Image (cartoon, rainbow, N blue to C red; front, top):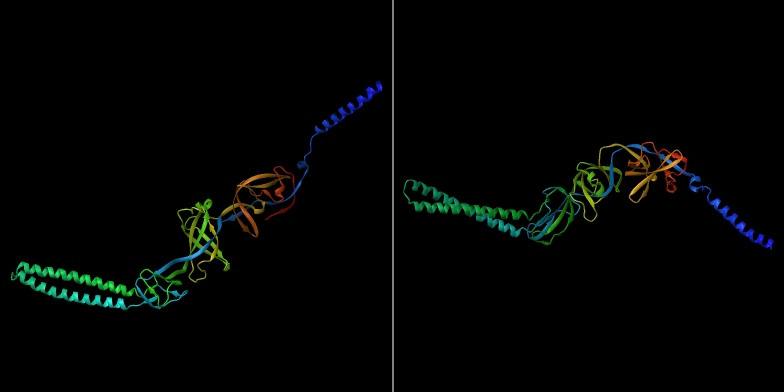
Amino acid sequence: MQNTQIMKKIPVTLLILLIIIVLSGCNKPETTSKEEKTINVQISTVKTVFLKPFIETTGTLEPFERITVSSEADGLIKQLYVSEGEKVKKGAPLALIDTKDYSLELSRAQQAYKQAQATLSNTNMEFDRKKALYDEELVTKQQFDDVSTRKAIAQAEAERMAAASELARVKFTKTKPVSPITGAIELKKVSAGDFVKYGAPMFSIIQTSKLKLYFNIDEKNSSLIKPGNDVEFSVDAISDKKFEAKVTMVYPALDDKTRMLKIEAVIENADDTLKAGYFAKVTVYTARPGDVLTVPSTSLIHEGEKTKVFVVEGNTAKQRTVIIGQSFNFEGNDLTVVYDGLKAKEQVVTVGQQTLFDGAAVKVIDKSHR
């Protein structure tokens, strides 16, 4: 009987001992993997660089002027003097419209003007005679008034005929349209034998001795661009050369859809090296040059609208939030300007930062002085 009671108590005792062992094990301090793990990283020094602040974008070259020459006369085109792509000087004739009707109109107007001048001359002589007689009281006032009226009418008619003659002459000259600028024929919209009416487009002429460069700046940087800012750009067609320009116009409003601000710069192109329509890679300088802090672009970690880096202090990585500017290539390295969050000569992690956390233990296995 006693043996049976002892056997029942043994399992209960073992169970109690097992619970005590488990609980005591749970109360032991836990050694985390984070405390034990050391992460290998590569670092680089925060560097001071003398830099002229800039913004990079893309743009397009356009003619300095593009003018459409339209017909100022109705008629049949008898001859074209220019072809597409041909260079023209200001005042050079472009085409000839049939002059027959305008020549006859000019001749009639000139004859009518001569007749009016002759009438006025005769009337003036009669007026002079009557005035002399009137001064001696040899003719009545009514007779003198009559000749005075005829003189005024003849004078008005002569002036009217002079205006009509000049108008006919101008119309006649419009049968030979001329180039309003020195440039090149971009587009010929008519051919010999076509009948054109007043106002019909005939030629598109572009001025290319100067060109306009148009590009867009995002809303965030729009306040940095002012007329007079230096611009540098390159084109794929002449990839080994840089071209310079000046900002001449900052448009007054952003585009409603793109939220971008349009900028215009002017380039001298007397040797016709550049062509309208070229795509341009643009760098616009926004301020005077000065010293700025930079880090390798690979050190940056972007999280939404925030950017952070890890700085090595001793054997520990510290997380920093930074405010950055533009990125650029300097001596073969891709760098990014840092405006706030770092100091010169601090060490930032460039490789291995993706696995780091604030306070992580690190081991520097390579140091790159870029």
